[in-house]
Length: 227
Image: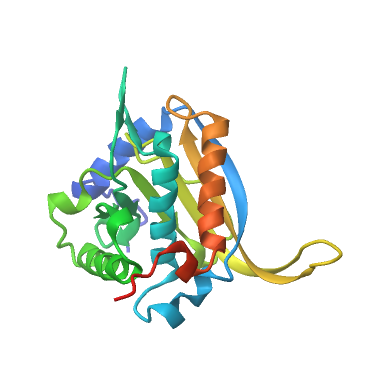
């Protein structure tokens, strides 16, 4: 066996992603961290058996983007491009590198529809079978490393988008005051914002809206369509 290093050329998705990250690193960003009680979100299987907590987060993000549309933009050199619908991307590790398939107009979909779209996109991501429309026109990205045991991290903005949400693992913590203290499943979410498009107050409004949706019962938020 040779002791010489192996040279692995960057090609395809990996090469494109590397160039993309250089652009993203140049964006002036700031981070906002919130703790969310995931009690209601974790009931998702009892409501829609095919859905996951990630699907609940996608839908909650779409609702928060509708309430705070300043976040649902692309950042250009001299302009912002505002989108009327939430096209929510989910970062997925594929054999060829990181890809971000997009659930288009997620705000118009029920939880079961989001689950179906997410499952299809993730499967085709790992099979290398995504088409260009599947990865185009995303307006916001979710990166979830919670299932890998990561409790908190900062994600890099998926330029030209204005923000990205990093989702950490849900862990039981003893929280609350003297009258309502108890163990709760808490997840740390970190919002990375491009300061060219967003200020702290706007980012905080979005984070607050997202937290509110995630902590409200699924039926009350309208995430489940009743036939």
